[in-house]
Image 1 (cartoon, rainbow, N blue to C red):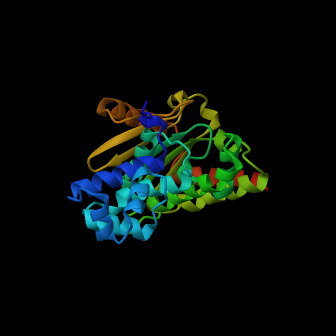
Image 2 (image 1 turned 45 degrees about the horizontal axis):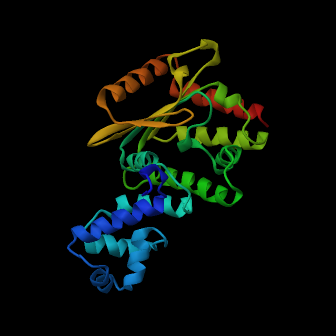
Length: 274
């Protein structure tokens, strides 16, 4: 029985996309394409089966010859490189791409620092506590940092990020006190950028609409998608559901401190961790 899509590795899915691009470009045989790209037929075969990692230079040449967007394939390749053949659900790979291609991201987190704002040390602790094998921890953290680079540091226009967090996030110990201090000061630094807005819902407010769970919405030119957190995250691209998510985000922001007030509170709590 062939593997189901959710059982495939990121490398296998990338290989299938490479094969589709080759065929659409008119290269019916791997040997003919190998000649065009200067690779042996067996190498083309291994790349398309996802059993061999593709080099950046080869990927660029592949996309050039096939006339496809390198950035779309690069995001898939980075997942394959970082995953090291560990199965990654297709929906999660798609959501990562959506973030890379988005112009605006809204995120609400009642429990931990949002991924886009995490330091490497903070992210490492979260990766470790989920039971990730030791050999994959560095790659998973690197993948998180790489996603930040491809969104918040993207040139020439970085993503606009609007993040709202519950005050409890600031007081929840993840790693050492030093890790928490560095993490909170990192949030303050990012919050001073023009493309990033950070707000905190104060503990004094009590329960709020966002305590139903964390979620992130990525807005692209051709549509929006939402990721809802839980035991098994779910990506939603249906307009009514995304609109409800945006409405919920607005309700959460209504009870949050302003941007300047939030950064002042975060900095204050950061000092308490020293």
